[in-house]
Image 1 (cartoon, one colour):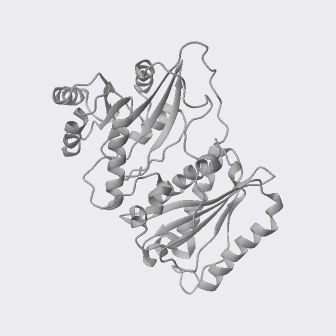
Image 2 (tube, rainbow, N blue to C red):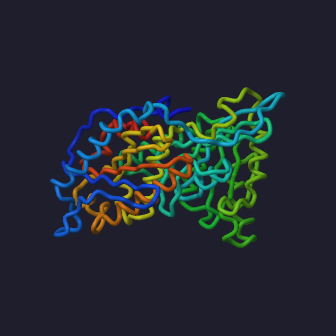
Image 3 (cartoon, one colour):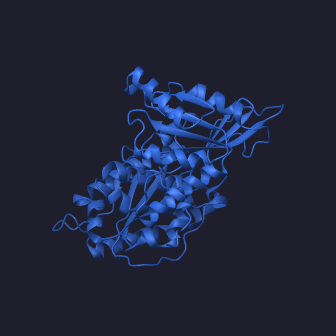
Length: 384
């Protein structure tokens, strides 16, 4: 699957933007940045030099036109394919739902065996649906990593929660993931009644069991199973892998017989340009604090394969105010350089290709009210 096959090319930009942008390229041999920063004001980008940085990037595109393969040729990167089964097969969608920070993305990555979903210590890191594809024997399991379910306030939050419940309703099997340390708190209480209306096989997964006492864990199990019937209960640590294989084996035997929906070497249905944007957004969550990561989004505007096998990627980080842009840039550009360096390294590891990453930081007021941004994230736009 190529990025062009499933990704959507960026459309015309709308909304308020600043004219000066910062282009950061992180090369394989180290971090190289255009010298766009005004030493007299470490937090701001000099407008003229910012324009030059963007012009140079465009000029490089023109000079290297002959070196680029078709932009739509970007694929999902190499992955060792398991042997295809010769007998009857099984296949099904498994929705992982739960409160924010329960460990759904960590579990998805553990089951897939590689990273397909971003993780951070902050709540509500996952915004869009991420599907990880797992092969176990003759079964193909499509794991649907959903946004955490919580009382939404903003439009974006409403879209995230709505998407999570839609995924549960559409799945063949639903797994409720609970952070065992938190117990039966208000967030889990709010999930039990709607979950009882989902007429699918249900599993209860108690996560982070390495961090609590066994007697506490058993008491929580009893409390939850008395409130809602589950087909199976699993006690795991997604981080250490304890109990994950037992869960995988049960899911493989529970999904219905049917043909596989994806090639045996495919580990996610997300295009690489979306995965690359998610990687950069993860680095924003790691580097930035308070509400700023939630007030920003990342889009991959361009993905171009070079004839030498490397990839040139252009991304835009959108924020809502100029003061936020300055924080993303950091003193002397230090924050955006660190984000770029870390994102480039991880994208290169995923694709097993050399990556040239250019990141632009732009202000777009009320981006979270723009339907176009929701389409980029794979979310339905709430009208109210």
